[in-house]
Image (cartoon, rainbow, N blue to C red; front, side, top):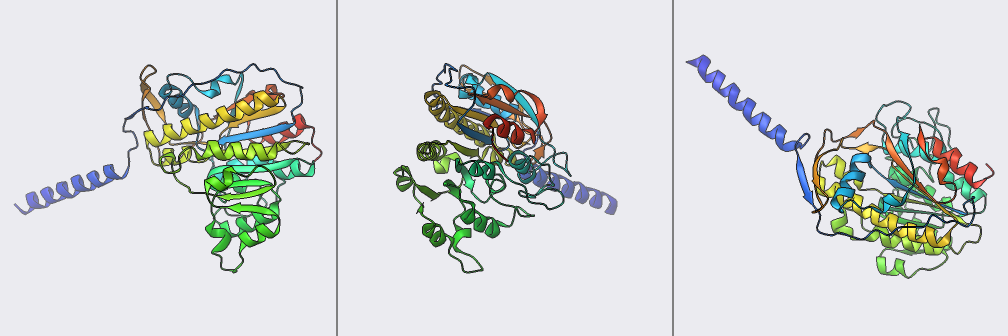
Length: 379
């Protein structure tokens, strides 16, 4: 009798534990998203003014793999602004110490041309600071900008301005932003500019350096020239609206005043969040938001005729698999295999003068030298 009681108790505990485990994760569970907000996609001529670009816009979809792209395409009835890109390739994302990179190492490879260890920001495996694309662009007289949907101090934007051993060092990264000379930067993370142990008010320091500092979208939209530091709400698309489209257009308008050209990095930061949460709706809506922003950028590039646009990712997140879909209704079904990053290759899309150099399969470090060579930058 006692044995039966213990057996029953053990079985009960096992069932309860299993149930809690299932509640914690959706890995392997199919979910469906049905889009209700379709948008039109324009086609572009691919006629450019010269073979050498004057401007470079690097667009990073954090966590965006091929499955995320195709989920977005399915949800918008088979059409994305990405369809306009004729030059396509793949990037291998492995870091120096992990098969599956994080955004610190993945971003550092893109921004500085060097592999590094996970969590590192702008330094190599020996701790030596790298020289980012933004610093090279500034050295060659170009204006520079960074626009993101998350904190400006997160790993991907940080690697373009900072050199620190850990991505968690946000107060130090904020201080490096102040010294960076970047003409326009827009995103979250204001707390690390004002609520600091060293009592520095970095917003005041930015103002003293000539920056227009705003924390609301309407004020930011009205800026047409000069230096801008914009601080906005973080969070998913349902909370922030079309903020990435708007702020990217603001940055383009400001930077386009610069006669020698510009380098702009735009990150759709929250595709990664959808993958980590194993949330199909979150993932697809962020992918579509990124693609709408890509459409705004293509409008600028088509009219300008001297702008190279590169779209890629630092890594894939979630191990997303598309299992079903309907391109007539915008319905897409998928499942995630992990809540972390994966080691699969990520896509590269290129448009504009010099786009032909961004095809094939290459390491994520290759962006650095290719952009420098296409732009004929002095190092």
